[in-house]
Each structure stands twice: as C-alpha cells, then as structure tokens.
Image (cartoon, rainbow, N blue to C red; front, top):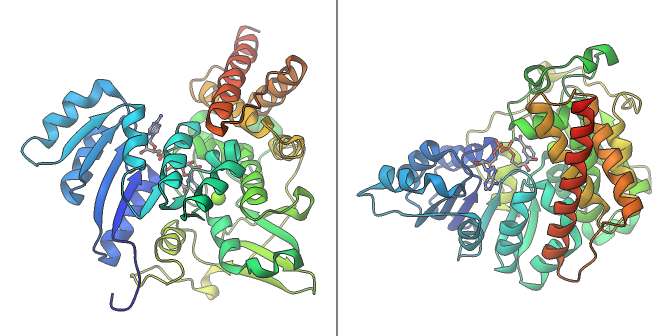
Length: 397
Ligand code: NAD
Ligand code: MG
C-alpha cells in the first residue's frame, strides 16, 4: 500500500449486518493490514464467531447476553475474548481503534457511536439514526475529541466528496438521489396490500430489513434529508430529493454560479466504505467500475408526496427541530417492526409516525435535557410508548 496513510487499528460495530459484511469484504479484497480491536453483533452469534476467527479481534461482543455462552464456546481455544450486553458494545466502541465503522441499525447505534466519537476515533457513519437523534451533539463530540465523522451512506458520501467545505456558503442546493424503492411505480392499492416480503425486495441491493422497509416508504430518504442537514449544516429548504432509479449518480451539489457537481459509481456500498476508510486517500481494490455505456440511460423524476408522505413528515420534524427528529425516528422504528410482524399494513407506517408526533406535541413529551444521549433516550422511550399505543389502536381496529 506504499504511501497511503490508512488506519491500522479498526473496529466494526454491527459486523454481521449488510454494511458490516461489506466492510470486512472490502478489507479482504483490498488486502489491507488491519488490526481489529472489536467486532460486535446484535444476535447473530454464528456469523460473529466466524468473522472473529478470520479477523482475530481483541474482543468479540454480542449484544444479546443470552448468547454469550455460545459465543465463548465457538471461540474456545482461539484466545479471542468474548463479552456481551449493551454496555460491552459501547465499551468496545470507546476502545483504542483509530477507525470505527458504525453499522448497527437504529437507535441502538447511538450510544456506541457517541462513545467512539468521544474517544477521538474517525467514525465511518452508516448508522444514520444516530445523526437523526443527536446530530449536533455527535458532530460536536467528534470535533472536540479531535476525531471526525465521515459519512458512509452513499448519498452523503457523494456530497462529502464533491462539497468543498471552505465554500459551503456558496452552495445553492444539495440534491439527494433515491432509487424510489420497490414501490416507485406501484399504485396505492398495491402498496396497501404490500407484504413484508414484497417491501424488503429492494430493486438494486440487498440491505438489512429495517432500511429496506424505510426505502419502500421513503422514510429512508426522510432520515437522509435530516442527516444531510446536520452533516453539511444546510437549511432544509436547500435540500432536494430526486428519484433516480438506476442509482448511478449518488447525489449532487449545486453551486450558486450554476455549476452542479455529482459523484457517480455502481450501486455498491463498498466504494463509499472505501472512501470513509482511506480519506483523503483513495484505496486501491478490485472495485467493480462504472461502465457508463451499459449504465445508461439515467432518468430522474420528482418523488410523489401523496404516495410517500414519510418524506414530508421528516422535513416537518427537521423544521420543528429539537427532539422532534428523535421522536420521529423512534416512532418509525416501532412502526416498521409492527409491519414486519404483520400487525399493521404498509400504508399505516407513516400514519403511525405522524400520529405519534401529533400526540407528543400535545403532551409535550419531548425531552430537552442538556446531556444529549440522556435526552435522546428519554424522547426515544416516550415516542416508543406513544407509537406502540397508536399501533395497538390500529391493530385492534
Ligand atoms: P443489518 O440489519 O443488516 O445489520 C445491523 C447490524 O447491527 C447487525 O450486525 C446486527 O447484529 C446489529 N444489531 C442489530 N440490533 C442491534 C442492537 N440492538 N445492538 C447491537 N447491535 C445490533 O443493517 P444494515 O443494512 O447493515 O444497516 C446498518 C446501518 O447502516 C443502518 O443504520 C442503515 O440505515 C445504514 N445503511 C445501510 C445501507 C445498506 O446498504 N445496507 C446503506 C446506507 C446506510
Ligand atoms: Mg442512502
């Protein structure tokens, strides 16, 4: 690797998921020499153990404590230490890795991500929910500790690569692209009848179940608008979403002088992971390269707000500010989980989120404590309770 200045000590939080597996695959294919400090998983102990035996981390952590015996059993004789529980995940995130991939899904990723930022690591951020729930505080924490947050979400990675921060004030618009999800061309009737199997069948890639449902409702793009607003300090009215089914242009930055810069690549998460790993260098690896002749034609359309109300809900939560995005995120997590359990229909998901925010507004349930993590936790817990009541009401009807 010669002259590249790459991180050596790394941790991967959520190593058994779609992004975690892609991260380790990239390391493998690029042949980088990394010393793995920690690998963590939620419940998939078999895959975690298999990864640990290959990557020899100092510590393998399973969030689900009931699986610790099995993890120890599987790692017996390997010399790799095993631990379990929510605190153990946050502790390993705070250990001495220089680079931490944050790829846990949902609010559960916030505490470990904050812990890694506080420890001064470069945080490669896939876990967009942590920015949505505590964006300003996460970014401030990283800055104070001398670390950084580098986006892995493909749209934000695109903007990160083409936005010159020294002239951010001269940006007129950020344009986030979206595949449009599996229901881009579906009727409302088809959406109303959608099963979990149909909703998680994303057109271009295989991702975790939660983000797949978010792509189908377009709440994923709503979360990404909030993520972009925080990451790039951009007012909501200067962030636009365009549906681009081919997913070749990952996002664009429009400058005041009428010049628009875009970042392109095949629909694959490994290039944005590679970018976050090597930045400001470029990691050589046998990447699938973009062939513009076979990729085209590239098409664009405006999202349909009638079919995808989640996008509007997210923009309203961003405009409301404070704890509203965290409440929205929690309600969405509960609604997605109720949909995956077949307790509510697909079109109920945005309704649960909107109704939760409305009820919380009336009850003044948003927390505004000074401690960002505690504040986000209280809002998250309150919103989960309200969302569960709304789901219960719908499921009983
Ligand atoms: P996934 O469901 O495939 O993987 C999630 C990982 O987190 C797994 O390792 C799982 O074991 C672990 N996990 C789950 N719940 C946990 C908990 N409570 N505590 C600790 N660990 C837990 O999800 P994914 O598709 O890899 O997505 C991960 C994150 O990256 C999400 O925030 C998602 O929005 C974001 N992201 C994913 C993609 C993608 O292409 N998959 C693209 C952009 C952003
Ligand atoms: Mg994305």
